Length: 373
Image 1 (cartoon, helix red, strand yellow):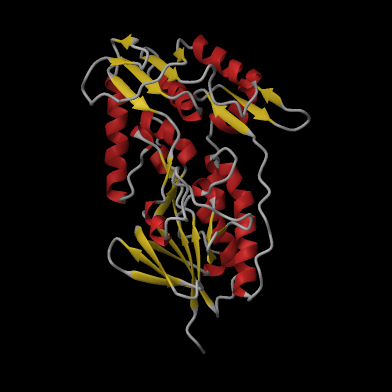
Image 2 (image 1 turned 90 degrees about the vertical axis):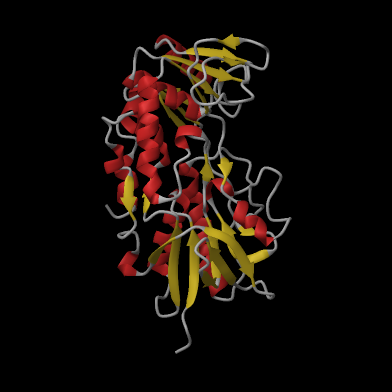
């Protein structure tokens, strides 16, 4: 029997684990090895990370870090802990190798890139496993000691982090500096954006609109000045909560036409890379006109899995990604938040719905269940 070929998935976020789990049930294990490469031996729930880094009482390190040993159906798959540094393709564009930080080369017949995105500051969870809890504990201490936290960015991350800080440290002053005229962005209705503004301000959270912080001050300094010259004198912890940066530096090794100017992977509607039919991408790294959310990865995974199976069967990839509805649930601590549902003309739901669906539990049980726990 000829050697089995490798189907390699890089990244164990929502996209990567969903794709790996589905492929493990559908690939012929007599023909293919399924290999999931991740920087850690576990997956972590990024939607839980704002509470994780603020609250020691949450003990989220016990529930939001989930081992990958139960991910694969019928044991058809393996996890390789490592960090991919480059991709080397064959001349026929039908496979290649990924090169790990350790120097190891892993050949692939099909490669799926799902490396997600990285935030700055407390949500910049380290890649190396041994560094994760020191990072978390250091940030918990910083939040406990801060008197005035300034969050540079009023998107979902800034809003949710503000709510967690107020839950855990109600006497800490919190200021959000937002470049737009409202929270979030114009993808969402004024009803949602205004409702979140009201809820945050009712907790004593200050919001400065149409202001920017261009440079995050060095740790230990006090005070920060906005672009317009406004001085926030008492700020002793300033954090960037702007949008994340895609983890795609190593993908640039495929050539200059692979990434756009912001570092997102250029893909066809089949989620194949433009010039690499045996390489797919999914999740937060793809160039697609939609908000980056974990919920979107289900749609990505369905397209990738069907097309991977087609390509392995010497057929053309024909399933196309059509986009996903812009649903959002934004927490405001454990007991509040708001949701926007785009159906029936679009409508918002308030604290009771956010609390029921996300704020109390952060949907950890669903995350764990998807990983076999």
